[in-house]
Amino acid sequence: MLIHIIVKDLKRMARDRKALIIMLLMPAVLTLIIGNTVGNMLTDTQSLAPAEVRIVSLGEKEADMKSLRAFLSNEFIQLEDPEEVLESISQFDPEQILMDEVLQNELVKEIIIAQKTDLATAEKQLQQGQATAIVILPENFTYDTLINYITPFRNPIEIQVLINPNHQLRGQIVESIIANYADYLSAGIIGKNTYLELAIEQSAGADAYNQLEQVINQLFEDKRAEINVVTKTIENKRPISGVQYYSVGMATMFILFTAGFGSSYFIGERQQYTYDRQLLANISHWEMLLGRILATAVFAFCQLLVLILFSMLILKVYWGNITLVILLAMTVALAIGGLTSLLSALNMFFNSEKATKIFDNMIVQIMALVGGSFFPVWALPEILNSLSKFTINGQALSGFLMIMQGYLLADLTGILVSLSVITLLISCGSAGLMWLSLRRI
Image (cartoon, rainbow, N blue to C red; front, side):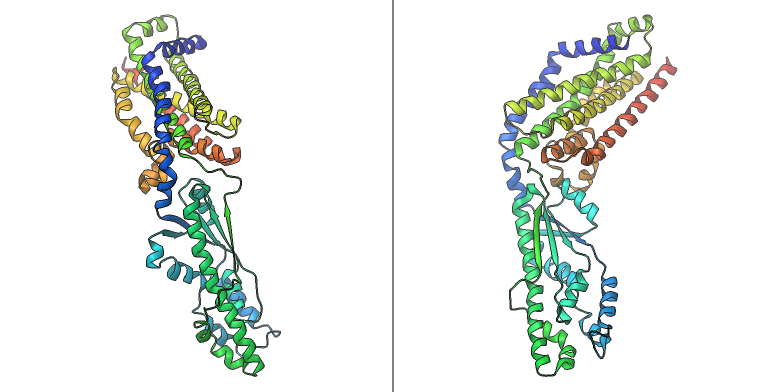
């Protein structure tokens, strides 16, 4: 019996010309227009905005200073007063120099917004396009830098800069600034080595260490690099073009209208006595609700496939791994089916189409804005940016863009789980409303 309900709803949707125009023709036309106009400016807009940089330190200064104290106290080093050497260099903090003197420079602040965070958060923000680049200071960064400054030894240091492939121009600016910072530190190391070598030759090693801090502050002329800066884009990740972005954006926005159309049929069935005939045929309200969820999900899935094929064949849009695209499309379609059931239950509860009308005329536009269908979420205020995670179209857009960039199933797990949870919650909500409506009858 359930299959008959699904087929009935699908036939009704397929015969609705207005629905087909809005759900298939309009997104195709808008993708063609917006993708080739506004979409072409997407990269330029990103280049003009300040670079969002995340600073990640894998080490701890206190632990580094403890290791340095232990190293200088070693009999092999043969320092008369290690504590005096430590005190002379204690104010020199290479990490603080980066944060305060480099990234907080008035000119630099106009083109870079720097924020210190942990590696997992930074990588997530980079993947979601919320960050332009990550600067990773390695473990023992302070220890190795100070060893290079106050001893004849040279510990290699590698600072990594990870760049989002969609923000290449701004990423190169970040790379240049970090490279200059590395040169700044390296110049002091080279000058220190020359200074200590000369002092030891003159048998003035102890006095040289006592004046080391003062000398270091004056030694930044030589620009040879002793600290390496390694720049990488996200490995094997493709940049997203404007046409790709708006192909996804329009598809994930107009799929919301499918939920509205699916829910509007319920009141029509009551007015045309189709609803009563189903009850006389011993079809329960729960079967009707489940049938509406599945029918809308099937239609939404077909809608997504048609729009994807259109963009692939006409606009030459690359969607990535087709298996992942189909998996995500099925998950999104089920969420749309759940949303349809919620709107249908609201219509039944109020015995009108008010819920559908409010959804189509206002809520869809809000969800499209918050979810990034109109503008990339990184361009929105922080509060709207965070709300996109709670919308079906926002999660769908993020997932499809990740597939286009080359992410794997493991990377999509969070989005698939989120969409499944959203589907479960709104389906439970619609069942609760249906139960309340039946109690009032």
